[in-house]
Length: 351
Image 1 (cartoon, rainbow, N blue to C red):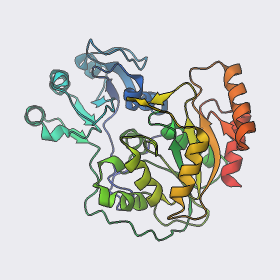
Image 2 (image 1 turned 60 degrees about the horizontal axis):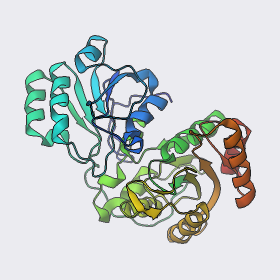
Image 3 (image 1 turned 120 degrees about the vertical axis):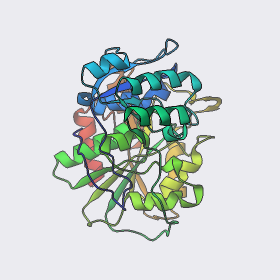
């Protein structure tokens, strides 16, 4: 995806960020791939801006990029180290601080989308001030957010929803927006999370908004538009997630989607980080999303399924896509594989 640097702040979609590139991706001490989704998202959608990766010895996850120390990355032209982790609670552990300080001393800015703010950590703030480096916190919602009105807005809206978190909602929204644009449709990807904001240059991190204003933030995220304009909205969490369902619901009510796509990872059996909770069926997610979404858009409907088949062979993926389509009577595809199935999913968006 092409990155466009936007120099001003948009009242409609939140803060605009022209991030200093290229990046060194920091993986911390992450051992669960699902918690490194920021690094993977930047690698897959902004690979031209990623020079390498760095992490603590305890890290067991890699983005497959050259391993570079902050000093080595700076010597190769890196301008910032981006925390590529989205861990539970968005914390910055004390064990990361020496590596963040090393990046600052090497002359790199630090970019993070964590709930814990870089600028709230005194030792980082002091080092950055001394070295003239920037600490860029992306998970900061705009000031003066309104409460939601529930009033229907013009334009078309598509929301990606999931059977769980970290399984392809952002990738699906990006691919759909790109695919529609390639067909000549006026379509905009609307970022609702840290990685999406890094890619799009703007957006609102819905999970950082005070609960009373979260649906209102979602309304701002996809404002009134021309009747034929498509806003493709990045979903968050899952309505079935014991920790993040509230975020998903606020985004659903505020987005008022006309259409939604269910995103699913076939091999996943339990909710990420909550092994006592099974992943719901696609059918259950469709039913729940329609039931709850009708509050602000009585015409809401599911138009297809996005399957994350990254760990499957092509033959196995094709078989699953075909069987899912037959079972549900809805088009299914893996947007990252593309092909005829994805074209049918795009057809459904325009139908």
